[in-house]
Image (cartoon, rainbow, N blue to C red; front, side):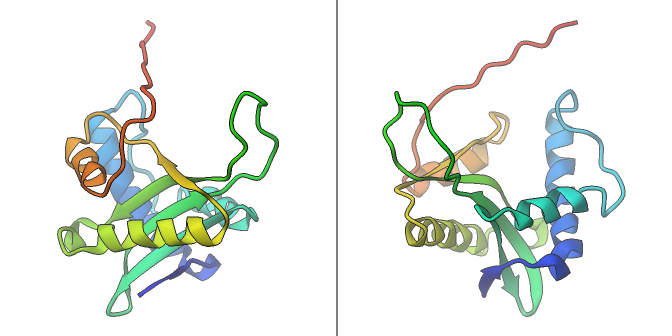
Amino acid sequence: MIRKANKDDIKAICFLSNEINAEHHDAMPNTFSAQGEIDRDADFWLAHMAREESDILLIERRDEIVGMAAVSIPTGPKPSFFIDKRICHLTTIFVASSARRQGFGKKLIRAVEEHAHENGASEVLLEVMQFNQSVINFYLSLGYGDFSTKLVKLLN
Protein backbone atom coordinates (compact mmCIF):
# COMPACT_ATOMS: atom_id res chain seq x y z
CA MET A 1 0.00 0.00 0.00
CA ILE A 2 1.19 3.52 -0.79
CA ARG A 3 -0.10 6.51 1.15
CA LYS A 4 0.81 10.04 2.18
CA ALA A 5 2.77 10.37 5.39
CA ASN A 6 1.56 12.25 8.42
CA LYS A 7 3.30 13.41 11.59
CA ASP A 8 2.57 10.08 13.29
CA ASP A 9 4.92 8.41 10.77
CA ILE A 10 7.94 10.48 11.79
CA LYS A 11 9.76 7.69 13.63
CA ALA A 12 9.60 5.38 10.59
CA ILE A 13 10.62 8.23 8.29
CA CYS A 14 13.62 9.00 10.50
CA PHE A 15 14.59 5.33 10.58
CA LEU A 16 14.63 5.22 6.76
CA SER A 17 16.37 8.59 6.60
CA ASN A 18 19.13 7.34 8.90
CA GLU A 19 19.68 4.28 6.73
CA ILE A 20 20.03 6.30 3.52
CA ASN A 21 22.21 8.84 5.33
CA ALA A 22 24.58 6.08 6.51
CA GLU A 23 24.97 4.80 2.94
CA HIS A 24 25.66 8.29 1.64
CA HIS A 25 28.07 9.09 4.48
CA ASP A 26 30.05 5.92 3.75
CA ALA A 27 30.42 6.96 0.11
CA MET A 28 30.81 10.72 0.61
CA PRO A 29 31.96 11.53 4.18
CA ASN A 30 32.97 15.06 3.15
CA THR A 31 29.37 15.83 2.18
CA PHE A 32 27.10 13.72 4.39
CA SER A 33 27.32 13.78 8.18
CA ALA A 34 27.71 10.65 10.27
CA GLN A 35 24.57 9.03 11.57
CA GLY A 36 23.13 10.76 14.60
CA GLU A 37 20.31 10.07 16.99
CA ILE A 38 17.36 8.27 15.39
CA ASP A 39 15.18 11.41 15.49
CA ARG A 40 17.91 13.88 14.50
CA ASP A 41 16.16 14.80 11.25
CA ALA A 42 12.59 14.80 12.59
CA ASP A 43 12.24 18.59 12.41
CA PHE A 44 13.46 18.59 8.80
CA TRP A 45 10.93 15.95 7.71
CA LEU A 46 8.08 17.50 9.70
CA ALA A 47 8.79 20.87 8.05
CA HIS A 48 8.82 19.18 4.64
CA MET A 49 5.40 17.64 5.28
CA ALA A 50 4.05 20.96 6.58
CA ARG A 51 4.74 22.79 3.30
CA GLU A 52 1.69 22.89 1.05
CA GLU A 53 3.77 22.07 -2.04
CA SER A 54 5.45 19.01 -0.49
CA ASP A 55 4.51 15.47 0.48
CA ILE A 56 6.12 12.25 1.60
CA LEU A 57 4.75 9.07 0.08
CA LEU A 58 5.19 5.87 2.09
CA ILE A 59 5.06 2.27 0.93
CA GLU A 60 4.05 -0.42 3.38
CA ARG A 61 4.46 -4.17 3.50
CA ARG A 62 2.21 -5.91 6.02
CA ASP A 63 1.74 -2.69 8.06
CA GLU A 64 5.51 -1.98 8.07
CA ILE A 65 6.80 1.14 6.32
CA VAL A 66 9.59 -0.06 4.02
CA GLY A 67 10.11 2.93 1.75
CA MET A 68 9.54 6.61 1.27
CA ALA A 69 9.60 9.25 -1.45
CA ALA A 70 9.77 12.96 -0.63
CA VAL A 71 8.37 15.19 -3.36
CA SER A 72 7.80 18.88 -3.92
CA ILE A 73 6.01 20.73 -6.70
CA PRO A 74 7.03 24.39 -6.28
CA THR A 75 4.55 27.03 -7.41
CA GLY A 76 6.68 30.14 -6.99
CA PRO A 77 7.87 32.45 -9.77
CA LYS A 78 10.35 31.07 -12.29
CA PRO A 79 12.91 32.97 -14.35
CA SER A 80 11.47 34.07 -17.70
CA PHE A 81 14.09 32.07 -19.60
CA PHE A 82 12.52 28.79 -18.41
CA ILE A 83 9.39 27.38 -20.03
CA ASP A 84 6.51 27.85 -17.62
CA LYS A 85 5.65 24.33 -16.49
CA ARG A 86 5.14 22.56 -13.19
CA ILE A 87 7.95 20.23 -12.21
CA CYS A 88 7.80 17.59 -9.48
CA HIS A 89 11.09 17.45 -7.60
CA LEU A 90 11.77 14.01 -6.19
CA THR A 91 14.13 15.05 -3.41
CA THR A 92 14.52 11.71 -1.62
CA ILE A 93 13.48 8.17 -2.35
CA PHE A 94 14.55 5.19 -0.37
CA VAL A 95 13.63 1.56 0.19
CA ALA A 96 14.90 -0.17 3.33
CA SER A 97 17.74 -2.59 2.63
CA SER A 98 15.57 -5.43 3.99
CA ALA A 99 12.93 -4.76 1.30
CA ARG A 100 15.04 -4.13 -1.79
CA ARG A 101 14.70 -6.00 -5.08
CA GLN A 102 11.05 -6.75 -4.38
CA GLY A 103 9.50 -4.08 -6.61
CA PHE A 104 8.90 -1.44 -3.92
CA GLY A 105 11.15 1.14 -5.59
CA LYS A 106 9.37 0.77 -8.91
CA LYS A 107 5.98 1.10 -7.18
CA LEU A 108 7.16 4.23 -5.36
CA ILE A 109 8.40 5.79 -8.60
CA ARG A 110 5.07 5.07 -10.29
CA ALA A 111 3.26 6.63 -7.30
CA VAL A 112 5.49 9.72 -7.53
CA GLU A 113 4.71 10.03 -11.24
CA GLU A 114 0.98 9.66 -10.57
CA HIS A 115 1.18 12.24 -7.76
CA ALA A 116 3.03 14.62 -10.08
CA HIS A 117 0.47 14.16 -12.85
CA GLU A 118 -2.50 14.61 -10.48
CA ASN A 119 -0.93 17.87 -9.25
CA GLY A 120 -0.35 19.34 -12.70
CA ALA A 121 3.35 18.57 -13.10
CA SER A 122 4.55 17.63 -16.56
CA GLU A 123 7.84 16.05 -15.48
CA VAL A 124 9.73 14.58 -12.54
CA LEU A 125 13.21 15.87 -11.77
CA LEU A 126 15.61 14.09 -9.42
CA GLU A 127 19.27 14.04 -8.48
CA VAL A 128 21.39 10.94 -7.92
CA MET A 129 24.88 10.88 -6.43
CA GLN A 130 27.44 9.65 -8.95
CA PHE A 131 28.66 6.86 -6.65
CA ASN A 132 25.23 5.23 -6.73
CA GLN A 133 25.49 3.57 -10.15
CA SER A 134 22.96 0.84 -9.39
CA VAL A 135 20.32 3.48 -8.63
CA ILE A 136 21.25 5.44 -11.76
CA ASN A 137 20.73 2.24 -13.77
CA PHE A 138 17.38 1.72 -12.02
CA TYR A 139 16.16 5.18 -13.08
CA LEU A 140 17.45 4.71 -16.62
CA SER A 141 15.50 1.44 -16.84
CA LEU A 142 12.32 3.38 -15.97
CA GLY A 143 12.81 5.93 -18.75
CA TYR A 144 14.63 8.69 -16.87
CA GLY A 145 17.53 10.36 -18.64
CA ASP A 146 20.30 12.87 -18.18
CA PHE A 147 19.22 16.44 -17.50
CA SER A 148 22.32 18.23 -16.23
CA THR A 149 25.67 17.56 -14.62
CA LYS A 150 26.74 18.93 -11.25
CA LEU A 151 30.43 19.32 -10.56
CA VAL A 152 32.20 19.96 -7.29
CA LYS A 153 35.70 20.95 -6.23
CA LEU A 154 36.77 20.54 -2.63
CA LEU A 155 38.81 23.48 -1.41
CA ASN A 156 41.34 23.07 1.36
